[in-house]
Amino acid sequence: MPATSSASTDRRTDPAFQAFFLLRTVFTVAPIAFGLDKFTNILTEWTIYLAPWINDIVPGNADQAMKAVGVIEIAAGLLVAFAPRIGAYVVALWLAGIIVNLLTLQDFHDVALRDFGLLVGALALGRLAAVYADRSPVSTS
Figure: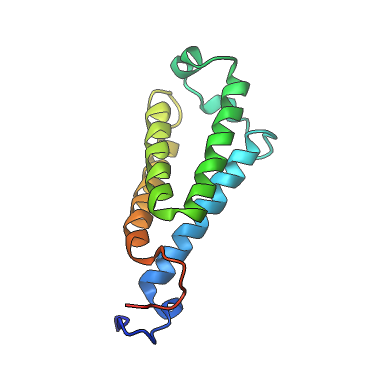
């Protein structure tokens, strides 16, 4: 049964709000976690995912480039946390760039496909944020 738009409706029980909350949480935590890992390489050696042509056009070496990527990812996660209407689309664009990078490498088409799914999720977050991104946990419509 769809949630009503009365002021007494608690959005926490609204399935669409729950989807917004889940996506906002994931697209906040994941970019921050992966961004921080660019400095430690605990999860993986991130430089293997950097296409040589990109490494050739960015200043410094691959490790420095991935640290810059980490800073951008942390900022994108924070943007989703504090301004999801904007942050969701920034993350979607960032994922599009990652996909282009991965498609130019030989061995990471599966990761590119996964990132395409994440891109679609970020776009869904952006659409849901248009409705649910205000600060009130209770509907005021």
